[in-house]
Each structure stands twice: as structure tokens, then as C-alpha cells.
Image 1 (cartoon, rainbow, N blue to C red):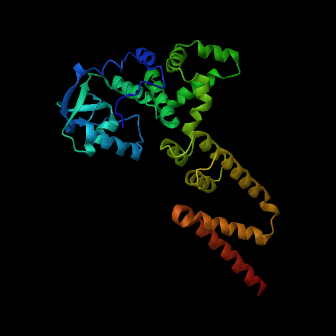
Image 2 (image 1 turned 180 degrees about the horizontal axis):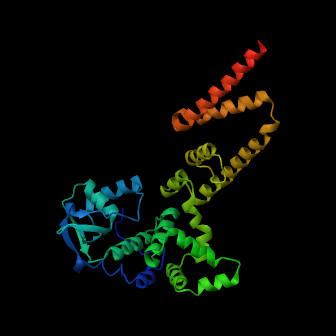
Image 3 (image 1 turned 90 degrees about the vertical axis):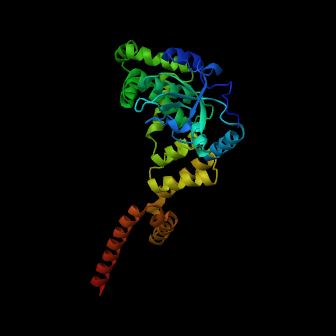
Length: 319
């Protein structure tokens, strides 16, 4: 695996770097590289990257085992402990080095503040070509949070206000200093407009956790995940998600199963009692709640006891 950055980058990062006053390209100079003990480097409390593909990480470990760490880690003097360093960029290489128990690593030390370190890590993260939609969305949101000093909820409100039908409200927003700054960030990134980000990406952060994790781990594509969220029944949605991953279902196949599910749901009232009981039994058997969701299985057992009590009561009346 090539450890060096590809020349092809998903964003015009030079413009972004200049906008934030941080030049991520200027640090990668041979004259600035020094070697320090890997044990003296600690991870920061908040890292923009959350998921590491096990296969890619294993491949990187083998590459570093053979060639060593070719691209220096970016660190800063630790704000907590003198003589130690905090990692700013290069967590995959750092983890691979720790796996191999390397004694020293090439680094470039930069005297960054907390805010600069966070921004630098986010900008480095956005330059990755394998960035999935969830990681990309989260990185951009963190970038906006850090630069504008507002929460995710305030970012959402700001973007929604600009899409308001009331022209006066829109004018008030888009002429504000905060909006000008937000628009400058999206212009520098060059991939989204504020509105396209609001419509196509912000809804990602509201997806059910299991779907969000599958997206983050690259197990399923965004369009497929978005379709699966149309299923409101949690158990059925989870089943469809697992089927889509395991069987590598196409988007059309997923939509077809959703239609069939909705059709079955709508036709339930017209089924005979025998068919209804049979369908319910089959669904319970397939769901395997006793394995997948013990809490729901306990609730189901309570319901079954109530059903048995109703049957017993009815039998006593007949007798």
C-alpha cells in the first residue's frame, strides 16, 4: 500500500487551507522531519475519524513492516504533559506503528492551538479519497462548528432559514456575517452548496444508528441505506439491512422488498385467521428476537402470557 498522499484530492484543499489560515501542504518538507519515540505520542481526546477498515489497516501494517513509516506523522507538543506529543494527523500510521511495536517514528512538530489542531485534523481527513458519506458529512459539520462556533442544531437552523419561503427572512439570513462565512467554507470546499448539503447530507445524521454504522463502515451504499430507512418497523428494517449487506442486494431489489412488505402489511386485515396466525408465527420465528433483542423478547413473552390468559378465560366460559 502506498503510504504517500495521492495527487488527486476530492477538494480544492489549497483554497480551504488558506481560508482557515492553515497550510497542510507546507508541513510535508524533509527538512522539518525529526524522529521521536512512538510511546511519547498520545491520541487527542477527539479524532474526526472513527472507523478504520480492518483489511486496509492490515495492509498498511504489512507495508510499514516492509518499508517503515514513509509519510511523517503530524504532532504538536502535548498541552497536558511536558516532553510528550499529541497526534494531529496520521492516526492509521500511528496505530500500525503501535501494532508493530516500533520504537521511533518520523514526525513533524507544529506548535498548534487546540482549535488549529482540530481544524488541521479535519482538513487532513477531508483530503482522503476513501472518505465515505457519513465521515465526510461529520467532518464538514465539525468544520462548520469549529469555524462558526455554533452547534449542529444551529447549523441546521441556519441552513433551513436560508431555504425559507419568506423572502424577507431569507434576505436577513444571507446578508448576515455568519452566513457569509458559512458560504465561503462551502465555496472553498467546492463540492456542495449550502442547500444541497442541507437536503442531501444533513439527513444522514438522523439515520437509525445501525444503518449509520453500516454506512460508516462501508458495508452499504448511501442510496440503499436511504431506501431502507423507509421501513418504519424496526425489526423489519434491521432484517432488510442485514439481507441487503449479506446478499449484496441492488437498489431495485431493496425497493421491491419494501413494496412487498408494505403490501403484506396492508393486506393483513383481509387474511383469514389461520393465515394471519401462520404469517405471525413465521415472522416471529424468522426474527429470532430471543437472540437478537432479548428486551423485545421479554416484552413478547409478556404478550404471549396475556394471550394464553385470554384463551384460558374463554375456555372456562365455554366449560
